[in-house]
Length: 334
Image (cartoon, rainbow, N blue to C red):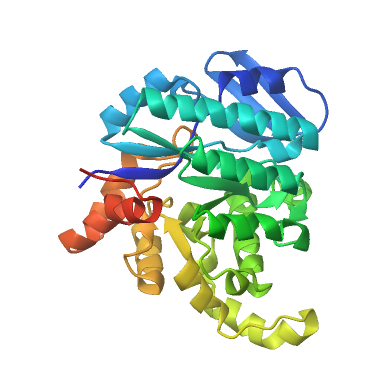
């Protein structure tokens, strides 16, 4: 079975150069080629400390070294939703063209999730069609909030309709979290709680607000082993039942049922008890390898061993290693 990594990131050099010269709430501080950091509202958001984060040649070398056969690349935060709508449209197209070129250059090793400029919904739908039909994108990346706006706001419904229609899985990745100010005040790194809670609110909001019910064919990939959803699932269902009238929620089934039906999780936790909890909740058909390469808190060297530590049947291991991803993203393994 080939190993497919569904959660990893590449920054195009042109995108880095564009961000390096900007001023405002988002800043890139570059000390040298492999020593860069993004700051959002003065708090460190993301770090670059290895060439594979932007150099495809080094990336392929690292894939070989770690035993990763295929990667589905995505842009990590900061995304294009943090700049003006017109700039976002321009850069989404530029980045998607670059990703498509890399996939052609390293055919069979690299695939990609398309970047979408969510602030301009009409252009986003157009770009999704282009990415699917012309660039062979395998999915789209949607950040956990759109410059502070919930992704389940009514304005973004056409994006979910298009994703269902084009059969493009949506990879929900952390944005600068809405809890940034609180995390900074509490002296906590954003990736520790902010990222995980933000994606959990996003995916839970999609369910509570009926988007997965309205678009039952949606396929969602929830980063970082599902945030905290698999571990709070009992409380999530209970809170829905208790507070649904307060917020006007009206679902035909429990929120956990939509999660099990519409959502896939990557295995980024690399912690055996957490993985077992997710498997007990979701089964082995909806977990996939993720490494968070090339972030310094990622773990390509730990990802495969964490799956093997579970003591699963070989068929279940094969599913998680690559079979589930191949099925979800329609990737031939021959």
